Image (cartoon, rainbow, N blue to C red; front, side, top):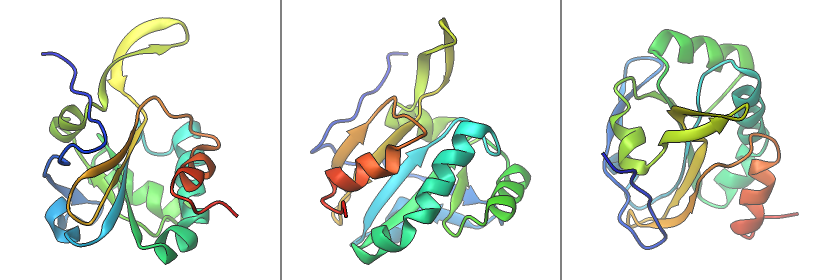
Length: 158
C-alpha cells in the first residue's frame, strides 16, 4: 500500500471516530466550520503532551478565528479519557484504533525514530476549510512550537 499524501485543494477524507466518551464524531459534524485536525502518536507521552497542551493554551485564539481543534491517535477511549483529564484538554480526542483515518490522511507510515526507520504515526496537522477542502497539509511537524508555526500560517500570530 503506497503512502497517501494530501495537498492543499484536496477534499478532506470523511471519517467517523469515537471520542473519549464513546460518542461518534464525524468530519461532517463540522460542515460549514474550519477544522484543525491533528494526528499524534500516543496519549500521555512527553511530545504528545507538549503538543496537546500547546493546542489547549492557544485554543481561545484558534476558536476566536473560527477553528475547531480535533486530535486523533490510535489510543483507546480509556487512554484518551485519562490524557484529557490529566492535561485539562477541552477539545475532542478521537480514537482511530484501526488506523483507517491515519492512512486516509497519510498520517501513518515510515518515519525515522532515533535514527531507525519504523512504521508509526507521522505527527501531522491538517487545516480543513468550511467546504471540507484541505487548506494546509503539514507532515512531520515538531511537537514543540508547532501551534506557533500554525498560527503564523493562519495569520493569527500576535
